[in-house]
Image (cartoon, rainbow, N blue to C red; front, side):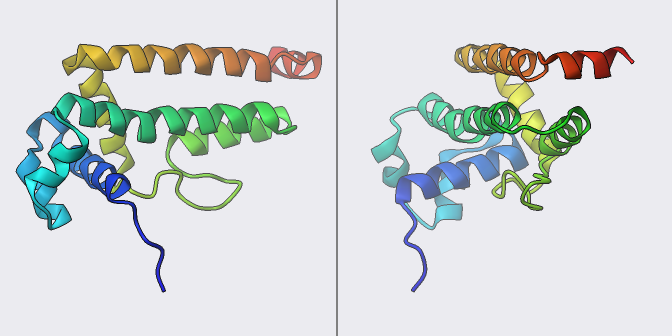
Length: 156
């Protein structure tokens, strides 16, 4: 028997996929319900506005992505070269530790970054989340590369 999918998770995943394909502002509730084979009431039951849906998408697919990224960088004792390789690959949606895509719901990772950038510029409430990510990422990278051995490697 297959794994039962939570309707809310399915709604957020479907919305994310459509937002990446069409752009969040070009995606309608009708598009979401068509892809979910559902009714608009199913969307509005969980989210009374499209902005709240956007926040849910951002929390799941952007904040969690970067939190996982920073946790892996900080909590692993990789050497400098491996960390750089990991960071580059991870940021283009490939986890070299597992050999699989990081975000499986995104058909094209370029669309993922375009989604983030367009939401940042078009939705002022999203800027807060992006700024949190930037600060956390900067602090994590500083912490990760603070060892004397790493500093010496960078200076060479």
